[in-house]
Length: 431
Image 1 (cartoon, rainbow, N blue to C red):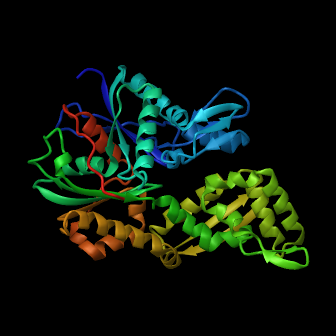
Image 2 (tube, rainbow, N blue to C red):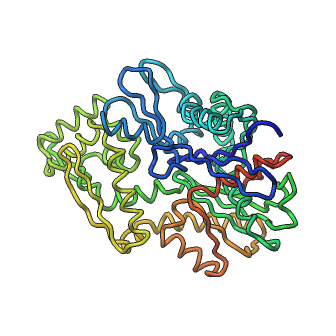
Image 3 (tube, rainbow, N blue to C red):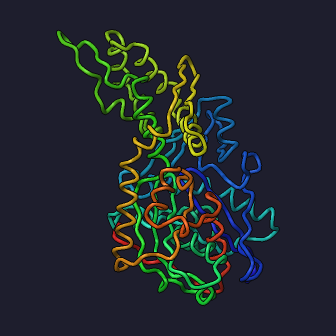
């Protein structure tokens, strides 16, 4: 086929790209999409609209400019809103922006960089999507349609969707020497997906693999929820959680809905609504924890949610190889260093692992209660020791297989893009 065939894993935190192999047997090539990033294979799925100018930045340049000059508008985790019918438009620079248009501003420079580097046009795009955007069928379809329209708006002709664990399975299949029943566990920032699929040498040349999928399901538990567990159990008191203030003749606690905005960094901006800030200023005057309440006000006013969660994420990564880590934050007068023990982190995230385990139960039950021959783990949360241990304890160390946590899905999408026929979208479970 003429032109370039591409696979794109548009993620909540990162976007990765793979070019289809030159021949059916070769591996897809991970494209270095962001030369300014620490890892150029990963484009942070962020947008920055600086000041009043017309410029729009994505990836590492967006973060660098935001950290350097502040102001403007920084958007992260756009993917999490794809299934929300409540998100219609947002106003930026006094102009309405649809979700499709925002996603397109991330994908368009990706296409342009690929075409410049390869000297040809992109003629085929296979995009990844979670197994379940939403358990509500209408919201799930809304998310799929928005993602396809965004890709078309970015200049990609006739984009196609396949589920992300399906894509990861295609890449893993290349390493198999015999037919194998595989449970693919793909952990993203916003969702985790599980697919049970027949893989192997006798199947890999078939252009339509939908019949090889026994079951698939997903849930909205990902790396972001693990980050939020650290915030909830270690950091929230530093921002006034459970503090009290004087209301008329008695003291009462600060409303929980306010401090729980800390559990999703992109919701912190909602605290800047005028009536909320006026209320917090009144709380500050009689608070029994004025420094903590001031921290919350500063965090919201200075738009420091991204900084906070970057520090939390760094500590979480450290806990993958160490028994303790420190969340260090020193911005605009907010100063703390909080130690986190891995054993505490494991206890805080036990409910999340239970939800993951229940999703595994569902996908195996859908397939008639079979036991997989292998379990393939991919995605950042697969590196959390307690998550990996959960799968080892259930299926045994010998069944666990792993690949690059951040690029295996994109590599599979690139492989799918190079197939002569349509791989199709694997059937999904009920969620």
